[in-house]
Length: 354
Image 1 (cartoon, rainbow, N blue to C red):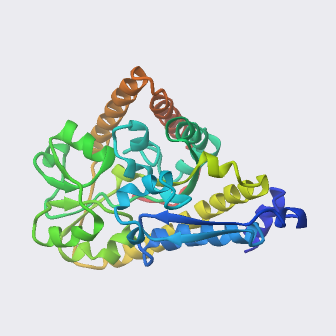
Image 2 (spheres, rainbow, N blue to C red; image 1 turned 45 degrees about the vertical axis):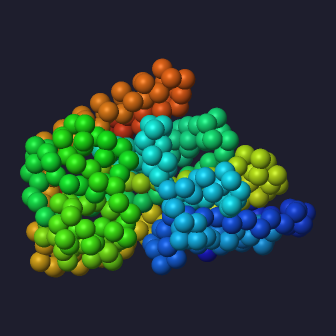
C-alpha cells in the first residue's frame, strides 16, 4: 500500500474529516467476468477496495459478477436502466455499430503494451472516451484497467500468410471479426467464452482467440488444439472502462469523484503488471508442453495493419458523415500516437528478444 499512500498524498486526495462526513453512497458495480476470473480479481475487486479506502468508507462499491446480470453483452443497459449504478466493461461488448466502441479498447495492430497507457492518460485517450460517452450515452467514463497482448490463436490449422485465413472458422469478436472477414475472407464466429473449449475440441472451430496466456492456460485450449499462434496483434493491449450515468456521477462529492479516478489509475497500473507477471509464467508452462508455436511473419503483420487501418479509417469517416465525429477523432489520435511512438521510442531499452 506504499504506492497507494504516496499517490494519494501527491494528488492531494487524503480525505479530510469534513470530506469523510459527506453523504454515504452504496453502489453496485457489475462486470462481465465471473467471481473466479482474472478480470474480476485483478481489476474489479481491487478497485472497489481502493475506493473504500480513499473515501474512508464513505463510498461502498459492491462487485457484481456477470452471472448475476444475465446477458453479459447487456451490462451497459443495466447501468442505463438503474439495475446497477456502475460497470467495469470492455467497450467492444457494445458491438461495432458505433465504430468508436470497436476501437477505444484496442484497435487491432494498434497501440501495444508499452504505448497504450501513455496514450490513455497523456495522449488524449481518456478525454476522447469521456466526451463520447457523455455525448452519445449520457454516461461518465474513465479508464479502469489495462492489460497486455493476447495470444493470436489456439488453432487446428497452421497460419503462415493471410491467405491461410480464407474460410477458416475463427472465434473472435468486434473489430477484428469485421476486419478478417472483409479483408481475408475468414469466417468469424462469436460465441461466449464458456462454449469455446467444447467447440474447439469437437472441431466446431478451426481456431480461437480468447485472452492472454495466463487466462488461456486456465481454459485449457492447449489441450485440444495443437498450434499456438503469436503475437496477439488482434489485441496488442486491452483497456476497460468504468461507466456511471451522468446524473448519478453529479450527485457525488468532488472528493469522491477524485477518489474514484485515482483508484482507477492505481488499479490500471497494478492490474496490468499483475497480468504481465502471470502471463510470463503461463508462457513458460505452455512452451514446456507439446504444442507447436507459430510466430506471425512480418508480412502477415503488415498486411493485418494495412487492413485494420483501412477498415477503421473508412468506418470512422462514415460515422463522421452521419454526425458522429468521435470515431474519427479517436482513430486519428491512435494512429498519430502510434506513429510518433514508433518514430521516437528507439532510445528505449526493452528486454524482449526475438
